[in-house]
Image (cartoon, rainbow, N blue to C red; front, side, top):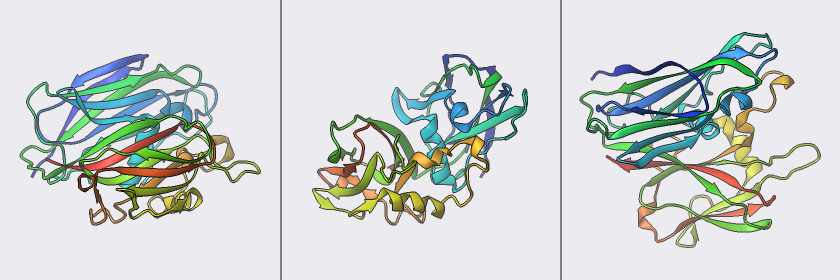
Length: 298
């Protein structure tokens, strides 16, 4: 086997715009998106930097096969790679260069010829990156994109990733969230606004369960406090080292992990059920951002 790495976007000056590019025709392993800039007076926080990339989408004939906001990309990348995306130059120095890289991958492992997105004809695959120009915390930002393909690969599966915005239920307490059916569910990532702070134990969602055909399946019931602690099973090192850096992005992210060993043994075949849904006990009446990782047949 061989892989081929290609520059798609070269140090493009960041603006408030949508960057659209055609992707190569060979089987697609992953897309590498890097943004860099200079600090404005003090250290820009991770939250500020991630906010400059609004959304990344890949479509095949107009149908989304990858569709995540940057904050969700950060969490999904940490989940899949069991390490944090690197943010360079953690210094509160004016004009100091810093960069962050986010990776959109189409298999649970990078460079896997058995699990990547199948080859397509020229023009079929489109990349769309929605960006906002950095304002008060970053100067002279650029964005670069590399693509890694696997010529000659014959994948059996590929990894679909997409976000679903869940509106506030209208009250605290139990509420149901329907999931899509048809593929093998590997993980549901929840990114919420409210997590415990000063004198509070409350999460946006306090408890959660998974049901298939109205019967509990694998996740009979779990407290968000325990799910928060389980992040250490995949990510052991802290995101931040000093208080000035603020809370890490994973502080608001929780994984309902149905592929804990990355071998597919516990993946949920949603096609077997008439209905699959989450029963969420809301501690706060607020909207949620859910991201799904599904294994699809090539």
